[in-house]
Length: 408
Image 1: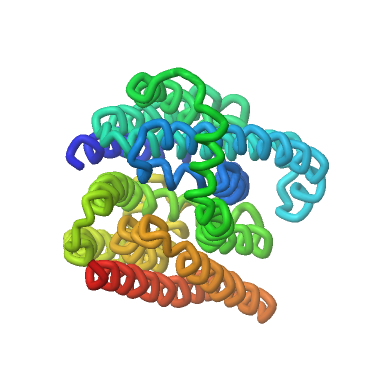
Image 2 (image 1 turned 135 degrees about the vertical axis):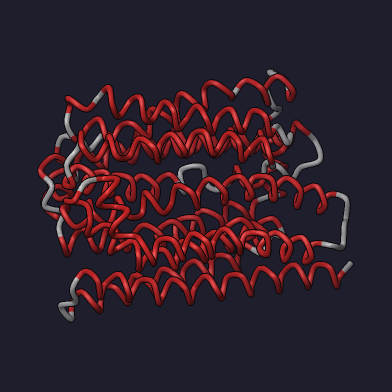
């Protein structure tokens, strides 16, 4: 995990340190446009691979893993084309809904971003399977650095530079490390019978994972789209910066722990190990300290820090961060171990939670919007509902691990 964490710290640390510069190169409205494109691309990117990449670490044979990875890529290409057509036809409605005229010309960044996310997931799954922590660290570092450089270089293009930078970072990083697993697994074609047999064996991933992944990401991203649609891209930009600053340190640690946890958990599964629940509890317990420390700092000094670092015009983003930090702390503790459900093939449970979380959080926000709630009230509503959902998720994960241990 140390190598992964180092790469993540470098990559996301560069993104965080560059934020004061980016807030002076781009307007809050530009950040609002970024929030809309990021949220939409994330939801599409969650399903374009049909969830097959999540099964890649599980087959005992490398040929089976290659069959899953190549099937995921084929799905990615097909769905990206469909998304591009839909985005082009709906570009006018998209720009009007979010009061962001720039989205009319930036429609193509949505399918490109979704394809980059899907491709990155497939490569990450192969790296996780081989526990290639060094290559994962390299990818994480390169992605952040390239993203920042792209954002600065493309600043004269306006919102385009800010929106396109994450996709450029993902593509460059993924292409740079993608050759490693292929060399270990070989380059030859996978027999069609092997592909069919492997897809039959892991068909539950196709049945449940796309819907579950969509609901999972929608539960995270739809609230920001609701806020952007009801409050405008200016408020969305302020909220977006709050999320960006909070999500960066949380994302660095959560991603590093999650990738290491997934590899270790899958390895124990293949070895029929019974000590899965202690691994879950130990992993979450170690994350409580950084989660609590982050929350205290933001609650005490959020507005002042935002005004000092990003400029006085961004002080409101610090006020928003005071509220949002609670959810990010809970996400840090819960997110890395949430992979237990799909790895134990409890996709139905995962799907049920994802659907419930999405309906609870998004539905609650829509009710608040209809009632005419202000932005702070909307954010407090979001935090209360999302915190409840994360607590339920951890209980489900621990219960699944305990039942698996008891059955062995």
